Length: 221
Image (cartoon, rainbow, N blue to C red; front, side, top):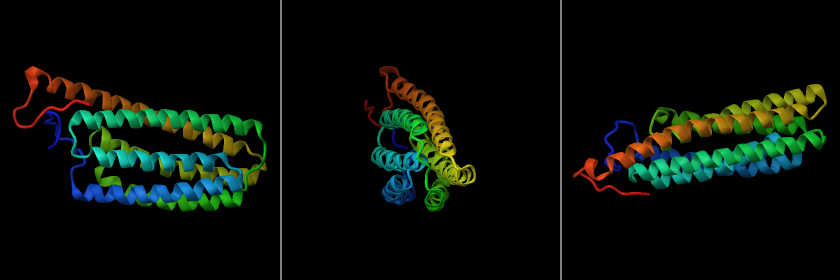
């Protein structure tokens, strides 16, 4: 296994099948970002825009995951830390959008919201099924699974909010769902952060002079 003196048994992403899966999921997320952002603007939906931003963030972080596959454990832990930070930022941005939406009372287009949410849900369920076999890897691999899971949950929430918008005739379900999505991103960031910090400490300890392996070089990042 590649890594900085790392002899843990957790999967680190070094398999052709996982690389192929990541390329497919990156393409899905990049495409859905464009579709949902345009639809969110047309439907006046903050929930759709929040989900679109999540697609963009996922495409970027999955690309980072792909880049660090096979790199030393410290590189992978640092990449996971960066992804945790990006999720915190996304959560804050989406919360800001939700607060803005609370004071701008244009009612979203429930029909367009629901249709796009179903399309996004289908794409995310496909991503989840593609990645499910690798859901219990190291922090870098685990973060990919958590982001895909969050996307599917978010799409279900957006679809539900579209129904509630149509039923209630108000914009509040859209605001509430955007706020809940912000909380979900922060929760995932906390999970990834804890795991990445643990792996980073382990990698630094293993790469100390007393723990240096003779089988592969220790690299810092």
